[in-house]
Length: 628
Image 1 (cartoon, rainbow, N blue to C red):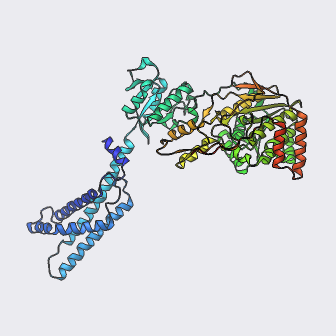
Image 2 (image 1 turned 180 degrees about the horizontal axis):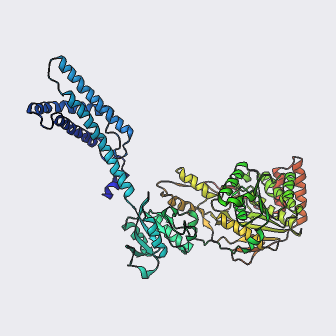
């Protein structure tokens, strides 16, 4: 029965239309017989039975004609609705009207009625009930089995969390599930049963998932290593299963797990890198009761800095951004996530290129800490507008750090990027120049200056994951710049926690580099996202290689040849032993640039010349042609 329903579901028009047409006519014949029987109190005389027999061919012809006119057989029966019922009623009414016309014609000729009027009325009612009832019955049966048939699932983890998960998912719900087996890495559990479900070795996963007809795999183990978790998920995806995860126990509602709390596996679960754990004592000491400014506060990193600072007890947080709508959205999200703590958030539209406006805002706020996250970050866009990258990423940084100095700020933090290391792009060069600005202006000023450098942030605005997601939702193709390109990745909360930890533990004048694990091939990332979406590469969606764009590297780096990485208090936070900087030359370039921009004379050539003067490691790259 279940296999039949599955077949019906997968084939919209399983039953031929002529079969539906025949069923409708047969039900009409039954209705006609019932009408004759009811008219004569279920004891019709012989001559009436003979009249019914003679009328039957004409009845079939008229009913068939009306059904063909209104195409009562054309709808998919299991999805029948009011429109289908209306078509049936119109067809039956048309046929009955023809019967009445025949009666009138016979009467005018002095002949016997082909069908008594009372029989025609009863037949119309009975046919309507039978034909519409047939459709409603098929639809009801289909929906009953569709909603009642539980989805077969397998749980990875035959322990306490596994049995709790089984009990949660098998409770009655709109999406019922039935646990058909457990998988576990512990060989001692193999061959046993838990709560009626057999336990199999995880090494048998591929065979079990296929043989048992599972549709989903639920991972219940919380302590599963990221590498092992990625292996399990990949095996399930290879078998065409949807993979779900159990949230940590502290997130269960009133200490009880419900099926609605299960979440679909996300792409960050497949990176195979352990989540970075921090002791937040130092962060709490710096942030609690502090006045904090976040430039670029509405961006991916900036908004998370705002949220974490408020959550950790900052006295007041001032979020500055040039984008009005994202800034407004930040306030709404903060009130939803943080409740009363969001009252300590102040939102202001500000441009880091506006020296006077920035000076006034920062001086009035008098911050203890400034996180400078405002920057242009898209490599292709900045490649054709180097002067815009200079004005925002370089001069904007100079404006913010000078304003922070004048306001006697205790700590200034620059959010930099791995693209600043041996830069090949305008964006990377501008961020490297921003690092030199911090070292030239901020250092030795009594203010702790911290530079944090990390790679790509998962799911940040404009990053590759939202791009791939949009392309997959649109049906493809998914575009890769190069089949071998790799990048470092970390989650937004991880990046922000490391930034705050580095700022809180630094003695000042430091460049921190975060250990982000192994590089990830972007091609592998794309293929995993396609599989997580339940699609098949080359069949449902294609991947196109478009070639590296100008300024893009094949592989990113976290330190230059002039820097050595030294350990710190945390194994994931490394400190770069910095090369010397000609501070006077950098300050002179900034003064010259400020004067030229004020006079409207700063050009693309001036920007490139400044990069060449201060960044000998900057080697512009050329775009690669597409390989497709």
